Length: 251
Image 1 (cartoon, rainbow, N blue to C red):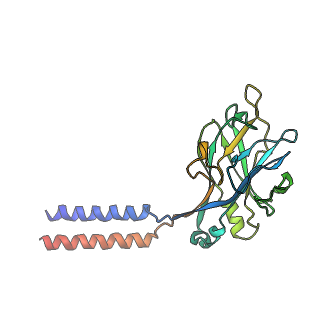
Image 2 (image 1 turned 90 degrees about the vertical axis):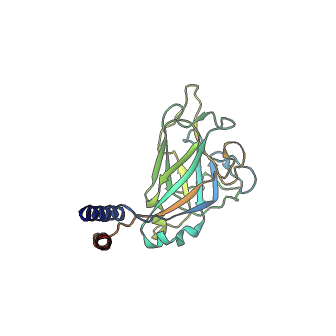
C-alpha cells in the first residue's frame, strides 16, 4: 500500500512538472480601428468618416483604376504592457466579404489566388479629408506582411504583423497606420473578364455582410514565457515531498 501511494505521489509530481513546463500565461488585448478607408486611384477617398460606407476595397492597378486601403488603430496599443516589455505578437484582423455591385465584378479568389500586401503607411492622413488621394499612400521602407485569398467567401483573416508594429514601437517609423495594396502583383480577372476585388468591413459598415461589429482590429498577445527549469523542478520536488508526507500520515 505504501509503495503504491509513493508511486502515485511521484506520478503526480511528474504530471505537475509537465504542466508547469508546458503551460504559460498569455494575455491578449484588442485595439479597434480609428480610421479606415480606401483610395480609388481615379476618384480618391471612398470611405467617409461618418455614415454608411462601402467598406475597404483593394484591387490591382489597371489604367488609373487601382484601389488601396488605409487603416489606423487606437494609439493605446503603444502603452500595452506586452509591447512595453518587447515580448509580444501583433495580429491584424480583417473581415473579408464579397458583394458584386458597383466597382466589384468578381470576388477575390474566384478566378485565381489574390495576394494583398500589408505595408507601413509613410505619411499622416485623415479619413475625413475628402481630398485624400492616391498619392497619399506612401509606403515606408520597413518590412511588410501579406496574405493570400484562394477562394471567395466571408470570414476573418488574421495576419501576423509583429514586425510592422515593432517598427512603430521602436520609433523607426511613425505610426501612420497600414496600407493594403496589391500593386506588386498581376491583374486577376474571372472567366467573364471581371476584375477581382478584395473587400473588407470597416468601422462605418453596418449593413449586409458587415453588420455586427466586424471592423478591423489589432490584437496584441504577450508571448508565452516558459517557466525556468529550476522552478519547475523545485515545484515538482515540493509536490513529491508533500506526497511522501501524506504517505507517512497514512501509515
